[in-house]
Length: 324
Image (cartoon, rainbow, N blue to C red; front, side):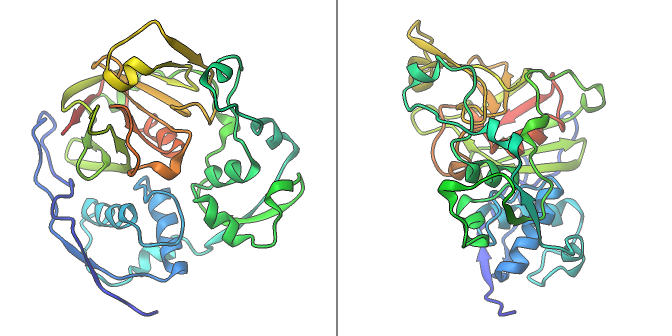
């Protein structure tokens, strides 16, 4: 393997130790030199980190920003040396890099046409995936282009049940197992705190002094940034309906000119809405995971659906959320 050592500017990265009762902005990690791993090694490490709830962003076999941050986060949380050497122990946790997925007849019910108009979307009962490629890519936490690269001979416009695809061997996001409804409070996680770093575009959960998970996010925009401050999680819903109100989204002002958009993976807030004590602001999924950490959101904390689905099981209604 050829190593090209790159210095990653993580001086402002928000990995920190904090007291359980503290809501102050914590100290951050120093810059660390990391190698530019080849695609096989990078993919195995991405899978390991993803399975460990240290989200590297979409799996694509590349040394992207969030992959590097998640790797340093994991090493820091587990008191591992943060060196540029390949960590064989981490690689050993993913002995098989790829697996296969066979398209099933029942997968087709999650795929369909989605009109571009919000008015037309509001007339539907469900906002499905628009293709089997989108369905499979999200299931395996991957960039669509990476799934296509792994399966170069496939006709993606005419993919059929019974066809088998090569996919990353990551724990899948099984959309069929999620049912619409409220997420109950979890007393075991009552002391956990959520920290949202709007500079590094990370959501981190701590249990006392222990870093539990890290996921990449999009935290608002310049026009409507995520609200800095200390808030509470008031409630959480799987497969939410979304009140699309341009006044609220663009200016933070609720109007009567809105559309109620039905649930589904192509709803703007995806699989989850976790409302905060700041009105109109929540932690939620997305209909476009490729934009996480890049395109702006409307003041909310946006995650890929596969990450949002895990966050709901790692925190509890009532937890404190510190946005900084």
